[in-house]
Amino acid sequence: MSSPWSVAFNEAEAQPRPGSTPLSHLSIELGHLYFEDFAAGPESLARYFERIRPWIEATTSILRQRVPSQRARISTCFLIDDYYKRFSSPAEVLPQLIKAAESQNVTIDYIARESGCAEAQGVPLAELVLSRLVPDPHPGSTGVRPPVTVSGWLCNGQRSPGAGGEGQAMSAAGLGWQPPAENGALNNHSIFLDVQLWDERNGKRRYSCPYLATIWQLLRLGLIRYGGAKVANPVHLERFPEEWDRLPVITQVNEEAPAFSAYTTFSILGHRFLNVEHAVRTIMQQVDVEQAVADQVNRRSTAEGMTLPAELWERIEYLFVADRP
Image (cartoon, rainbow, N blue to C red; front, side, top):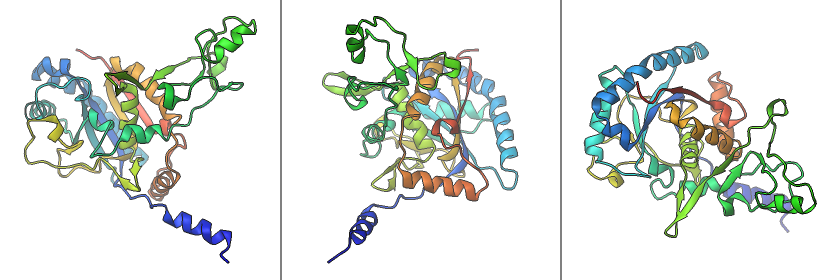
């Protein structure tokens, strides 16, 4: 007769061990490229890189002070929107982008497609991360509000009564309107946020920019696995294709670049992305990363003398700059 301990041991052994992914110390996102940015012409792109170059240099200097005992590994990346509106072709867009950066002595190591944050190499990343969301219910919640996997909405506290869901029951009790409340509000003053993760169009789910940007951050932090294996591995190309679907999710531009994923991330973005990234931080607070993956990254960072914050959103830093000169 087998003991219950042997059953538990066998079940644990059956779980795939997470594959290890190379990690830099820092991933610097140089920006996002949308149709209107490309349409403004290469001179506008060059001016953008000219504006952000001092910040890249400052960020690099700061990181080198954090890891003085070794050579700081820093990689750069750039995200292109091919999810909401496709434009031109990789064969035309990418050389212009790379040339504009090089004209200002800025090196782009990796270029990624935003649609790859929804699905990468056949892996449904958006659905995968959705299954790892653990909502943060407000104290006293009744559970009337549909779960995020059904509603497509995620918030950081309690919605205002009268807006539906559990508010209807409260209104019926004669409480009337009450303000929304943020969980863990600073000095008891709330900044409530309700984030839409997707909508339905022609029977197909279309994911929101904040949700895809959250997955983008998780990829950069090296925290996503599928069946134990890492996903969206960078690919180097000798020639860029004409069709976006033929472009890898992450293209390695600089063959000598440090690893794409990193222990921490820094994003240089235009002011227009401030609200999006506020939503990203809210979503990140409710992502439950696979424990074995989290432990693996923490062990490696500790061995390198780089202690990581327990909260994922605290591993992310930003700089918001003017969208136009």
